[in-house]
Image (cartoon, rainbow, N blue to C red):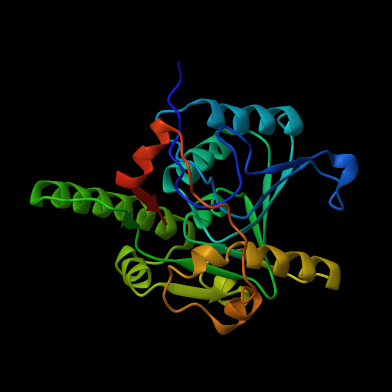
Length: 262
């Protein structure tokens, strides 16, 4: 019997369901098979349940067939473990990977983006990096627990800072300061600093699509500091999410668990 994953972010997704969309080459403007990450990077944890990572690996290999793929990202972040696993799977894939940032790649989503061989960013899009966070719900914590969590956060930050530094050529010390300050980068800034390779100019239809997804990311944006006004304006409409009521017994763990996200 597999472990039931813990819900980390409010939403309507069911356990073990895809939080990405796969499109065949014949159905895409790029002429390449595409995978889209639009919204939260996994509403459920990837701790201990192997079925969801395997689903992504299978989808990538089936649609890409070892050849080039385009991956579109418009996400405010999510579960750091899910992002790390996806990054690892993309790193193992032999084909050329073009990443397109459409609207926003914030937090955990940046780790996925930096797995690309070529990174394009929409001219009105943003990227954001910050320190990893724990969100505690109804928990009573002692010193040892807090110290262990602090050690975990520091280790996670070290790994991410090294990843960002290796991709951009920016010093680890500067990356650490940028993460502590919760740094947003415009498209031109992202290219200038090495987080992306080229600014992507898009049409009106694609811009409307990115704005719609920005509203879906609003629940994550409220947890972040220094959010650009343009993103706040896009996400200003109320977002409907599923109420957490009458949870199954095994999911009552949620009240005492932590959300570990970027």
